[in-house]
Amino acid sequence: MSKKKNFKAESKRMLELMIHSIYTHKEIFLRELISNASDAIDKRYYHALKNEAGGLGRDSFAIDIDIDKNARTLTIADNGCGMTDEELENNLGTIARSGSLQFKSEQEQPDEIDVIGQFGVGFYSAFMVADEITVESLKVGETQGYRWHSNGVDGFTVDPCDKTEIGTVVTLRIKESTEADDFNPFLESHHIQSLVKRYSDYIRYPIRMDIESSVEKPRPADAPEDAPPEWETISERKTVNSMSPLWRKAKSEVQKEEYDSFYQNTFHDGQAPLRTLHASAEGAITYQSLLFIPSSAPYQFYSKDFEKGLRLYASGVMIMEHCKDLLPDCFGFVRGVVDSQDLSLNISREMLQQDKQLKVIAKHIEKKIKNELKDMLENDRETYRTFYDAFGIHLKYALYSSYGMLRELLLDLLQFKTTTQDTPQTFAEYVARMPEGQTAIYYAAGASVEQIKRLPQCERLTDKGIEVLCATEDVDEFLFKMLFMVEEKEIHSITEASELEDASEKQSLEQETKARESLLNSIKTALNGQVEQVILTSRLKSHPVCLSTTGGITLEMERVLAQQPAAAGGSPMKAQRVLELNISHPIYEKLISLQEHAPEQVADYANLLYNQAVLMEGLAIEDPVAFSNAICKLMV
Image (tube, rainbow, N blue to C red; front, side, top):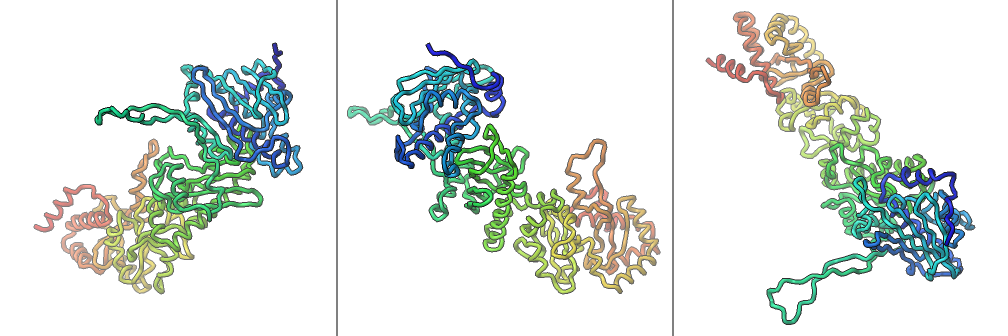
């Protein structure tokens, strides 16, 4: 009878920590065991290349997974290098001792060896799902096999066994399920297959399993024509991993259909991507990437539940499904994968030890995405239009929320509808069309381009040939206010377009304002606090009045802020409204006359004109019935 040996670690608590604290998901154990098997094959293949014993061609290697539900066992077998009794004791009996790392360090050119295991703790993750583990192994060049056996922290045994084939077989006895933990899925072939596809799909050796499927039995010759078909379940040994990652192939070897199929199957999108970015880099850090710009927003993209980030692989093994640090938030819509063998992983291989490596990759990726979007904007405008319809508002919010820090990255990607163009325009395109004498970029806020075009303030600008950017989305005006200046031009609302008035007009307005101070005060009094000021203007054409604002809050900003939840005890922020009277309109002359001959009617006219201005801004008036009655009274 073999003698039980204690683990060569400082305490049993160390193993408990490995099993219960390092890994966040139980299913990770399969990734670790498959990675160990892959490393073992790598070592044997490396020796084969060096003309050492046990040489085989790469096609001769494989990893086999078997399930026995009755015995509650899961087995992972490889035909790799195998281990002696001493190696079993050292590698599996000493926590945090990596045989793969030692093998790599012993080679003359260790950089040529791409083994996955580094820390020697992945094997112990199997105790998260198994209450007993048996390892049988026969090393290349040896004739005697050995069995390592353990049920956890109580220690292990190493004994000779009758294994005759080179390699290692790891057999887990899966724990019984409890109310807190369900271990039965680890005995289901479809679940194990899905874990292989998720974490180990790109291991370079075939991973084989028995896959069950239903097939129709041959119809007997004497069976009636209308007899229902009979089915039987068959089991076939199949390779369940892809082995060759698409991103490791040369771009010239991959067809668009392959890229599209990979994207749609991997990220569950029914549409093909707008653009595919396939790139690799060598230098300070080596990596391959395969990125996709979707045709439409991913499911829940504009909700807090959406997880951005790229899939991160290390030597073909998936480390993180959503690595947020690889993507800036502004490009969170991009899907894809990054694979690097240079990453410094933490002990569980679920996180990185050094974020500077990620920062280097992330900076490269950010630049590639920006260049791809810029190329799309300049050379494929229709495709960019599709992209912008899906993600333009995301870029705007990203720039606004960064307080301008992303200005250089995002500003030239933004587009806005205008009052003169059929398609959205960039700031640079707008400035290039500015007529001589225009010194600022003008915008107007409203629900639609059509509504903005009908604003009273737009008429005179249109006559002067001045194009107006249309702020039709909630974030637009906030963004314009934050940017302040673009292409060396200040950004002004059309309500701030008084600079278009020449000196003589301004002087005339000042004189007229002094002369009609009594009328302006009467109108303001009649409006009973609804406006901050009543002023005269010469920038209107056919309309008698318009609304503008003073201070930092505009009418559109007031509307947007009113939709947000108010702070406890707070009240909605209000714009300080200004009623502007067109001194060239007959209504203005009528008001002057009323002030002199029937001052009691000024209040009626004031309220009518104010509500008319409110309606032209696309806002709701407070009392539609009173407004209707006032019109009827005037008509009578």
